[in-house]
Length: 90
Image 1 (spheres, rainbow, N blue to C red):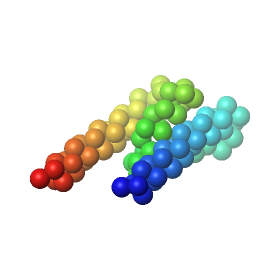
Image 2 (tube, rainbow, N blue to C red):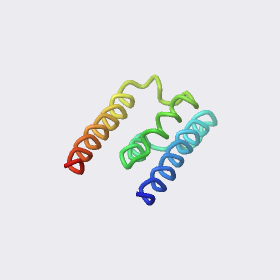
Image 3 (spheres, rainbow, N blue to C red):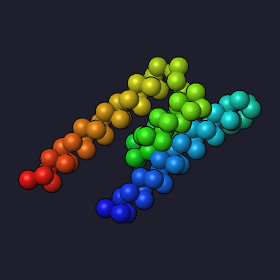
């Protein structure tokens, strides 16, 4: 359990920082991080960090297709977590 907690702290921190870095790159007309990679961070457990990064840096908050994909990942994770907990509850 401790390893999972450490993983989630690290991946969410990286996700948050990646959103911030991409916003900085966008403001300075530099090479950007692809939306695929931003969504990948969310998909591998960095959803909370990504969500905080989106709000804190005001990044990707107006792009409907990105928000739709991000929210779909978050919903899928909640569903998987729910069913995973039900399996271990018995």
